[in-house]
Amino acid sequence: MQSLGAGQRNIAAAIVVATMNFSEDPNVLVMIVVYPLITMVLMTPLARELGRRAKQQHKKELTKVDYE
Image: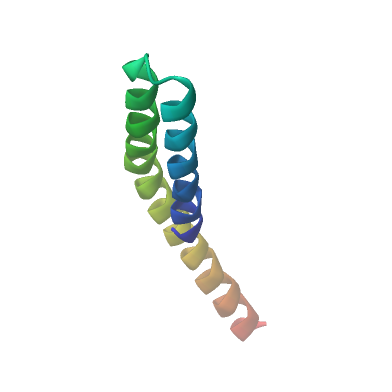
């Protein structure tokens, strides 16, 4: 989850560049705002699932070491 938040800081820089260079085309700014929202909706469940799998794998490794 931390890496998802770290990537969000680049959105502000992209908005600045878009407003300075593409101010006549509002679609550019809309896409810069919409894209991070879509990626957060998609990546948050994925990050949770990968975290859950890693936790299960870690538990399996711990129990395997205990029995050996």
